Image (cartoon, rainbow over all chains, first blue to last red; front, side, top):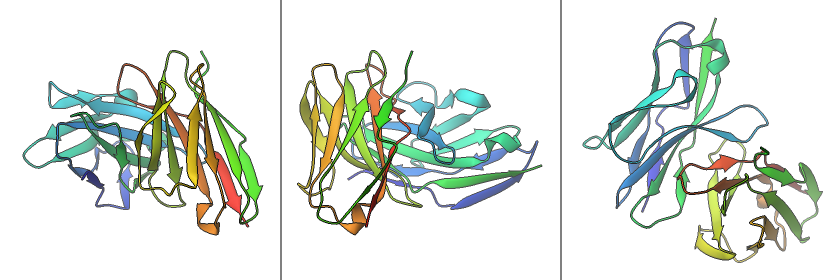
Length: 114
Length: 111
């Protein structure tokens, strides 16, 4: 069965500092991994994905994520946080070996202080 | 290029009633998935439609049903509404690439 864990309900960081939002996953086949962001009263916006290839993937708004197969992790990172990055972030996984169901984590609220 | 659109934006229903939510996918996308997002939780997969067929289903009862039309738009129907069905219902579309594009959602309140 697929599952996603986001161990932190909230991450607090000062503007200009690097940020990391953690995600670990479990899937029986090849993992397709995603990060989405949700602003208040809005739908989810796609940030980046890992399907295959380089373990470090770059996405929208300066975000990047590192796929670590041995640790089954896919942490979201940004070198320098902005106040406007404050939002709810979701990690998601899909079984790339023939599955179509995407499982989302519970979300991590990122708060960037000016 | 219009993104994913959903209607209505908000809906209030009474227990036991039935509701239909609608979704138009992003241009060029042929696959539609529906999610339920309860307050403070991540989206939960309800089902996915492709070529007018339900391709995969999550752990939701048969009260939740759907349909996809030849123009790829989709409907989500929920019968015999329960208080616990109150949530934000999200539609997402995808094409050849695997990422999904989400609509703004329909906020359903069951009283």
